[in-house]
Amino acid sequence: MTDSFDADRVAVVTFDSFGTLVDTTSAARVLEDLVTDPTAVARRWRSNALTYSTVANDLDQYRTYFELHLDSLRDALRAEGLDLPEERLRELNAVYHDLDPVEGAAEAVSRLAEAGYRPSVCSNGDPEMLDGLAASAGIEETVTELVSADEIQRLKPARELYEHTAARLGVEPDRIAHVTAHWVDVQGGMNAGMQGVHLRREDTGGEWPSFGPEPTLTVDSFGALCERLGA
Image (cartoon, rainbow, N blue to C red; front, top):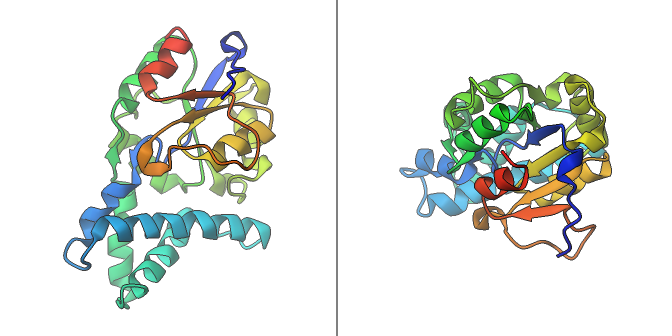
């Protein structure tokens, strides 16, 4: 892949949340007593949510990310022959408020904050989910802004959310490096004028698809990102 990243242009670094700062496969722990392969079901749970969020945008049927994940969990479990009561589903879905951090995330956010990059989160997650994420990832004291899709009721990869994030941070989109493990999110940020940084993680599908533009920059770790930015 080509590398067209311009570090000198970056004033702010934004991060995706779920799958980038916290590990969505860690949701499998609440499924251990319910299904034979908790990790596989946790992946389906998450995959459903990504699909449903895109369809919700296209059909102008906004729902909070928590509710989208609730539907996704219900369907993932039904595929396993389980149909749980609503209250139980909500209890399980609450794990998305306390997922395991991705290695190196907290240190990277701290380093970038010290270097003046105002690290922030641009996420589909609703505010309560983002508060939990900040605590789980250990970035409560170092993150600048937690920008939620709920503020404008538009979900990634809709251009409006990235533009809203830039407005919240008071910079033009082309001064932002948006860091995410998800190719759709990378391309969404780039479509809004940001530099798209692909954090290549195997458990989120590490290889870049044939579809769409290549990322502005690909890194294999948070440390590599910090080094590239001199943080």
